[in-house]
Length: 285
Image 1 (cartoon, rainbow, N blue to C red):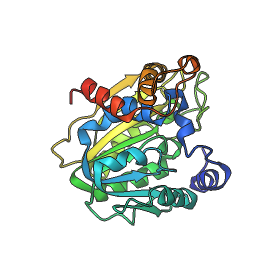
Image 2: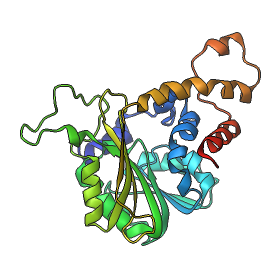
Image 3: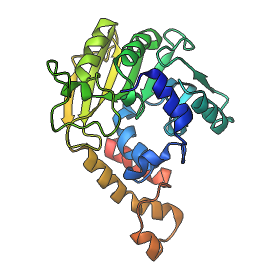
């Protein structure tokens, strides 16, 4: 897995961002389908939050949704190109700021100022030195009742400590960090004064568990508890399901479906009100 310098080169120079990052949500039927059916149900208990920190927002694929749930927002990314893209995209948002960092630190974020920290589909590319640095920083910037939701690699769980390589059935097709795992994240949280209270380990585009979503609080938080771990090898079936069931909401939001629309692939433009209402009913809210 490349170090921070090569991550910076990839996202700041090599990658062209053809659709502002929304292209990575195509398998889910678009970013709105992925947000309301996949991400929001997993974090809805922590929203709204007075202040939100997003680590590695890219071009603002998830910032676009997070903005409606907070009074203050800060997005931190190691790519100046991404930070400038977010500043342009959210220029009318006076309660948000976007800052460039070194890929490790959150020096521009005040102590105990963050009520909800979020990173999704970004830190999966971050090796352990980066993850450990961010966990240390989160122990400083989270408010007493603050919560962090981090999507990171689980590939370290598949590396043989003796051979130093993956098992024969494991491929790293999605550029995941090689030395990060849920167990290492949980252990490091305890070391720096945090608690990992839940982990969902999933198969992102693979037949094996490759990714992990960790929910983290401060050690003294009323939410602190022993970590609840769920292995979800059916995660990618959610993509197929969401892409299929979101289609009527697309058509319902945009008017009667034509014959072409009825047979086309799911559109990335979804009816937000319809999806939000459905997800809240499913979540019991």
